[in-house]
Length: 275
Image (cartoon, rainbow, N blue to C red):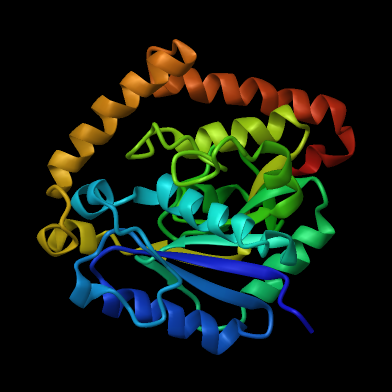
């Protein structure tokens, strides 16, 4: 049986953290997924031997790729290598993601197959307030989801991918939004515009280990946490204003929510999944 899923892990100068995540995914999910590692400009000693693609150009070495550019780089390489269509789903995870010690990808596939309108699926986190909204259901549809672990349907990516010079700057995410402020909302907006949905499931759990960014920013070769947060907002607001003429992230959220509500007008049979 060929794996239905391509799991993509993004690494920058944290080889042990990345290897631990890789080993866990492989141990519990190897039947259902191939695993690819993207190195986002790490110094040579921090590049894992089983790295699939290396971002070794000057700007990547200096600043990294971040989530959007890193995943674009991987997905566009799969596409250019004619491997993209080997998979039905893509599991995009940052290396600071903590996953359960069990077969989770099989569950994510099953949930997707039962919910054909879902384009983007995320495991829930014990730290999220969203966990209180499930009301005895194991899946609910949302207009905002944090982006450390996205399970995405290939048919959706096929509809939104940018093939104008496919590479780290386009393909799925807008690479001009370097730090990713609002990047998940833009992707979810595209889904609801196509009458597809974004959902969180409580059948699978994942956590983000923020301690790496808080305590190891110099090792990762990125700005300290507080500086990065300020730049994340400042640069992201410029991107929002230039691309959408929005004055705040809240404007993007409201815009996405409009299409979320329209989705349920067109799909009344799915109203039970509305929050």
